[in-house]
Image (cartoon, rainbow, N blue to C red):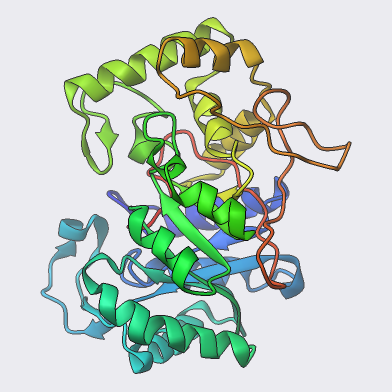
Length: 348
């Protein structure tokens, strides 16, 4: 969706092609990303793929109205013409319209997972109107699974407790630098048999390449956060592990986590991400990070995996993409490796 800088159409298509070749079968988008550009590009890239072989998710809550302010959309983070404006709408009618418009932009026949997107300032409308509308769409088999995607954990935990969502998308809160999802969200999901998809596993890029000026949660990292990231990098590399591999494995290392979302800008970034997922992370690395206080006790947890052909998770060799365990039948959402340098797919 041209986050921060333009991505050429051929490069966007090549990234999806490379993801498919690496075995990735879960793809996420949203109207917000590039004022619909991400949905149009992803739909075009997936249109020739067997529809039953992949899971597609998008989001509702922002409608795109013609007649934007003009110029570019960089104030919202995207290098696209500002020819539309975003309108917050978590009403039932707004949700239905958003799904219809997303299907039109995608050019596909269905959406497997729909998330309420960033309802932070719209909590009442999201719970009273938006969520019930999604539940009806699921009951009518218009969509396969429903949930919410945010950069915070408190409201996502409420969705797990107070609704029948299948999954939640948590951006930036289960990483090497931020483990706040461990307090309530991940234990609640595990107890209820719900899936959590993690995004922002590099916290906007700092954990991919820690350096002065590197972004952390979409702004330049402060000196303390940068110093902590550099310590993580030093320890990881002393154990022969790239920092981005450690970051990826750590984020996938909880039983409730069904997969990771990334926002790769090229085939090379996807291929690198796949290599990081295959990189073994020795237990000694996690032990040192816990001993130095850079990770809390018990993080990351080993994920049980009954398939002997798959690796054992973050304490041992890397794991193959796996499926979530929602409380009701839902489309599979395989884990996706994360990108080395681009801002990750997340809840922006």
